[in-house]
Amino acid sequence: MRLHALDGGLFNLQGEIICGVDEAGRGPLAGPVFAAAVILDPENPVEGLRDSKKLSEHTRDRLALEIKQRARAWCIAHATEEEIDALNILQATMLAMRRAVEGLAVLPTLALIDGNRCPVMPVRSEPVVRGDDTVPAISAASILAKTARDAALMRLHELYPQYAFDRHKGYPTPLHLERLRMHGVSPAHRRSYAPVREALGAAASGAAD
Image (cartoon, rainbow, N blue to C red; front, side, top):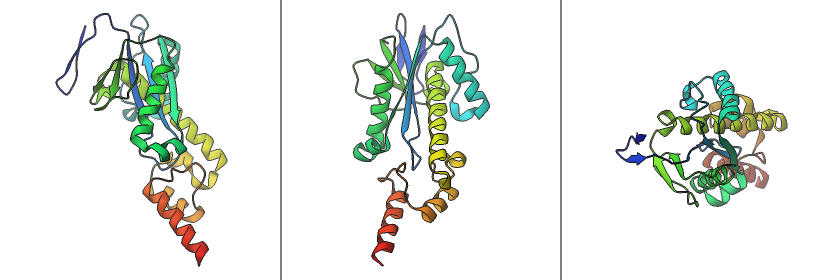
């Protein structure tokens, strides 16, 4: 079996144990960044896989359950807000991806990573641009990462309801920015992100006055 990457590359997948890898949550101002790795079972396929952003929440939740039931192996991992601030979001994303692959119960021989770069890890890897909508295993990873992060943001909403994390999932929407100005920075916010830094600066300035 052969898979043509959209950037013109060619992968020969004959005999490989392939895991798809994707992330969720690089853009938000709060919460961890999540990654998932999935090894699908060709004998027990999951129908309807595609980029999680193109699916409804209900469909994502249903498919996430099917993936967990039918895949040969899957793992969800994350990097914390503190790790994002210490490393930067790109390196924290690579860390979460590596943790997801290393957490698989089945050792893959090849990891197909959504995007244009790969984390450093023991498993051989190849990037696939727009792989979340073209490679089923990456689509599955996209769905698991997205549903796990959304669930984590719902838990943050219970802790900090004043920020309305249930409505914007941490993304810098007008509502989120308004609540950030009103209530200041929570422990769940990424302090290295510009709107959060600005809120911290405003709070410090107000305290000095």
